[in-house]
Image 1 (tube, rainbow, N blue to C red):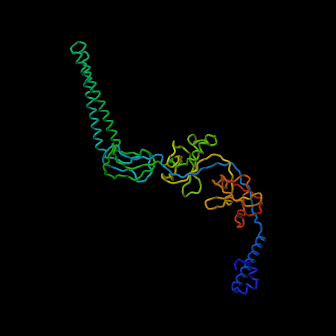
Image 2: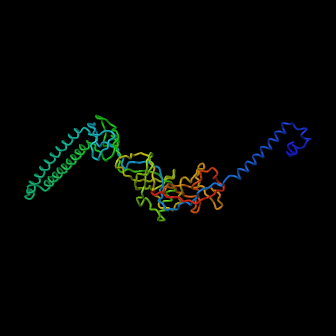
Length: 402
């Protein structure tokens, strides 16, 4: 029965005699439904208007390119405070976590043993001075006796040697005194740099070891102003900067303090500025990145070492195409701009986007200057790839401030 035309199946009396009434009704219902759908679709297609859209060419403008990187702030100076002499902690002069200035006293080690050493060294100097004076007198008395041959030349030379020995002993005693005074000075542990101090690692009365390999860690200090921002750039970025430097379009950060802009994790604007002051001499073979460093003012001490941030590095001047964000649609992981060709048909173009400039989005690749992009009407559900539209000319406006 399935091989016969439906019309013959319905009108052939012979076959209707052998066909069940329910089958005939199903066939009639199918024919009626098919005919209705065909007429409805034909009518809808015939009555659907051509959707209007507003199109414009992308704005072509020379802009400053900023390349974005992630990184963290690090202290320019990070010092472990350790004692230079051994002894018992007598006083602690700071509060944990406070801001201190270079030269401020931090710890005092019991100075009494070192004061005794200074007094002993001073006494040794007095004894050596007496010996020097005695030997000088001996030489002075012997000098005329040598001329009259009362004293032999040998005895005279011996007395002169004794004077030299006494003078050497005096110099040694003076050096011992300077060493003892230095040890006494070191009983007051001072801050080597200005910055924020950490918590103390020892308490009052603790015995600390100084002046050796296994010295006791007392605390640490990190400088705060200025502060470094450390980040890593990819090999492709590094090569691009090298070629730009060679072409003269962008100087190398090794030679010029290229500007940077920084924002923290909770900031939306690039309100912090700095400059590049270092680029490493090699790329990491494992990660394929190279380390860069910027220096930033931190007079209010708001930035703390270890803080995460985003950095924009000056990438030179480029000729870019700009489009409004409203003209960009997402297709899974791709970004697409809808354009209209010469036949008024919608053509999607995948694009690679950059940063914002003049309130518009930079298109790095995927568009031409002459492309007619849809800037209004893209939200219409009938505006989709392959559909004919009615384009109207419009214009893309730039924001007053970048």
